[in-house]
Length: 355
Ligand code: UDH
Ligand code: MN
Image (cartoon, rainbow, N blue to C red; front, side, top):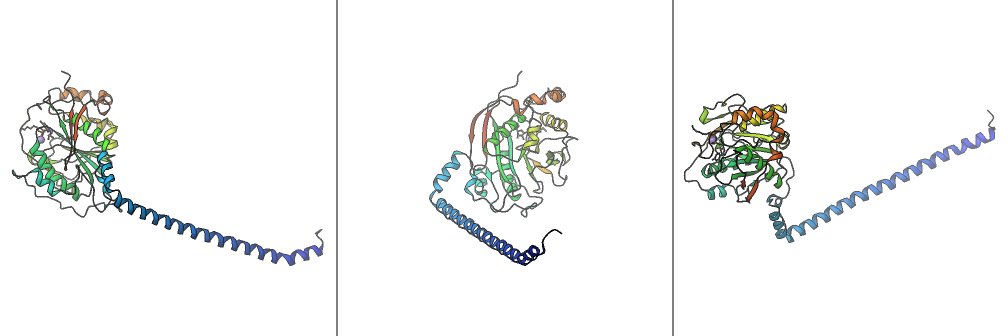
């Protein structure tokens, strides 16, 4: 149609030639591209090798200064090369029910020598990456023997659970009335200065877990770990009890503004925390009763920790005051932070009751 037949013939003859030329140039371009990719891969391998060589030299030559750096930051763990794979969901090292011993003759030196993998109160599994990092916070005053028994059992227990962990003992200085909840707030704030822990376990010094299936890991909801103890015939003390040993993630505890700082003396602070948790529409979970069992080392009521007669009054005010009484208003002065082999010892002045 309107195209002269001579031109049409001419185009048909060259059409195959043009197609051939086009295919050849596409092939040539692909070949160049492949060549460059191979070269890039080779380069990456080469530089990885160089990095490894350099690291080898550094490992040998800079060991001393690396140690010095870890001392400055008080984090003894980076010396260990980072493990490769995640630890399994269920640790293969668990025993189940344990035989606990409370030998009068036990010494700290013995417990230290049983736990050579622990440095400055911290540990991480040697050959896998822990699923969670957990700070164990223990409020303390005048209970050295209980602390010794707890360290003796808790270190191997946590190691069998393949956790990365640190044990913090928050020691209340002075003689004024004891305040368990405020000490635990201090523990949370101080532990976060060392490391960005995933999970916090608030732990009475005299409660020793009897079964290592009772995992010291945090869950979607706040977890209460002491369903039963020898002293109560292994029954929950009362419905809603949230004391003794509890586990909350960093975020769950932050969300409730931590514990109240105003419970001086014995009782109420754990119920207050339960109210805070419930106000946030969180739900307390517990492991099965046969697993969540503890032995409480026998003790009498401590002097300086008398029953808090105001506790019912305070509990009534929690929904109104939790926002302005807790982590965000926890004032204290840290007197010392010591790092013996098996725990981090934070000694703190937390002040005194208002009246
Ligand atoms: N705590 C201390 N020193 C004290 C008081 C308390 O370290 O002087 C810590 C310690 O971690 C303890 C926790 O706070 O485990 C809770 O205190 P508690 O063990 O006195 O509380 P519990 O409910 O005892 O176990 C209540 C009094 C026991 C009376 C026994 C009479 N039958
Ligand atoms: Mn007790």
